[in-house]
Length: 334
Image 1 (spheres, rainbow, N blue to C red):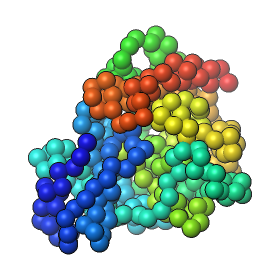
Image 2 (image 1 turned 90 degrees about the horizontal axis):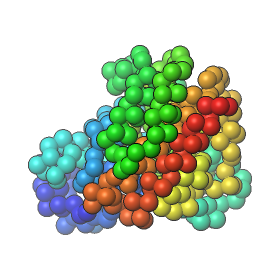
Image 3 (image 1 turned 60 degrees about the vertical axis):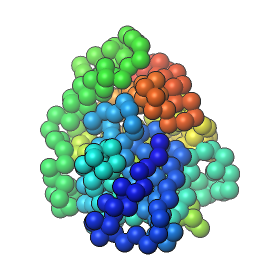
């Protein structure tokens, strides 16, 4: 879908953002959730984010959360795109949206895009991503104004319940094993470590890399699922994204599923080493991450069926769900 550029230009001018020419926009490929546009007036570029036209879920498309967390983290060592404006008035563009500083760089989505990188560079950028995640989890939420950004107490119990509810909101068919996985998780929720700021969707293609040195992360993007909670949920999802199902969900051979990258176990151990954290109850976290990714995949297909297809055969994302649920159940047996 296209942006209403005249309305956006008026809004930018009203909020003291100089616009020197007619705006042009391009929908950036790769999004399966909030939509991202590159917008320019011929001199300056911005990134504009808004939810999809249909099939939204409140927690999964909250651009306001993205704005608040990145505004806070811009004062830390965690690399983010500095946010400029948050508009929560649907009347302007038909949905809430954010405007952020444009970060020039490279986003590696397709596996072929790793072809220009050496094995040493691939290993280095993976280690850098882990270090960025460790840095994020080391941020003291209160020190950056995020003490009230989430409710850490009971976080895991709520996550198990949340993703079950999300399934009910977006499911396109009945899958009894989803209920089975949910019941297994709900029956064995571990005690969480101290809460941290979570990204909620951390992987390679949610990072902008330096154009000349791809081992440098210039910004982590797509913060719509960020919150305060158990840091091991971020780690587990990062590892589960190595599953081949991600290729079906994204509609392309994803860079993050490339065999050139470390295995899920190696990623987890690298995080544990860099952070000094124990991976206690790791099977639970893997099971929960598989449930979350399965629901995300179903949600993509659900939106496609409602006419909000993000391209690349989004309706086929549902094909990944049974395998992810099976893998989640298998993880609980580890």
